[in-house]
Each structure stands twice: as C-alpha cells, then as structure tokens.
Length: 203
Ligand code: ZN
Image (tube, rainbow, N blue to C red; front, top):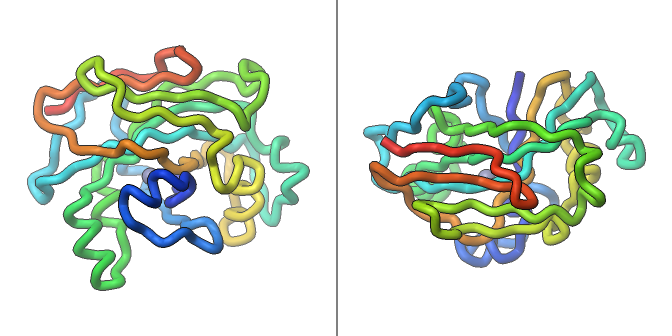
C-alpha cells in the first residue's frame, strides 16, 4: 500500500509557508511504514524540534487504475477519511533549501495518521466537506474541500498518470491553513462534518 500526498492544495496554506503557487499539483509519497498503528500514541522523533500537524481529507482507493479519466475517477473510491501528515518542518525546510527530496521529513515512522473511514455516500457533496483539527480542545485548523485548488477527482486523474493506483492506497489531499507545532502531552482530535475521526496523544 502506498500513501500519495498532495502539497500546496489550499491557497491560504501556500501563503502561510510562503510557498509558490504550483502550476501542477505537488505530489509526494510516504512509505507504508510511516503509518501510525491504530490506538498508538505519536512520539516526537529525536531528529526534529519542529514537528507540525497537517490535517487532511483522505480518499481510499478501491481498485487498480492507471490513466484514470476524471469523469470516471469516482468509480475508484468509496470511502472518505481524515488523517494527519506529520511533518518535521525544520528538516523539510533544510531539504527544500538544498532542493533535496522531502522523504525524511514526511515519511518517518509514525508520520502518517489514518483515522476511521466513512462511506462517500455519507456526504451530499464531496467538494463541500467541512473538516477540523483541534489541539488540546482548541480549534487549530479548519477547512472545506471546496477550497482545494485541485478537487478529489482531478487529483485521482492526475496522480494516476504517473502511478498505478492499487486497492488500499490512500490519497492525502493537502492541508488548509493553520499548521503548527506539537509538543509532548498535546492531544489532537480531528472531525469531518462534526464526526470525530481520530484522537491522538503526543508523547
Ligand atoms: Zn500535507
């Protein structure tokens, strides 16, 4: 199983990191070893002093596909989720400055949180889903999928021109503004349309 992530998909987040607005979606992959096992706490790794949460809407791929036409993209997924793309921002910044790959900053063990899944039929419009992340019961990130530069079906079409999508692959669709640091004893919880999708303790 692979985890395909989209970067810079929300204008306000591009601005907060002072990144350039991309011409095409920014795509990277996290290894399956980065998935935090269910019910486990997240341990801040020793190699970073600046681990950031990024809450993102997830899509679970249900069958093999390559060169998927956007108008058939919906046939390739039935479930929508919410997760965190943890990022060692200090490491990522150093790698970015040198033009080097990001994997160490985003693909380390535990860096991928996948919450529970809901059937896509639970949503009236996939391009209008509200989602939030709270830290210590205070709202820190709030997004709506309508604000994505590239919507779910466009992303599936785009990434499948490079990578064959397989059953069980997970697409992370990018984070809205409000990313920030976690510290020991923080408590994170994420919701999709007010349904709690995950809870997480930081150690
Ligand atoms: Zn991300």
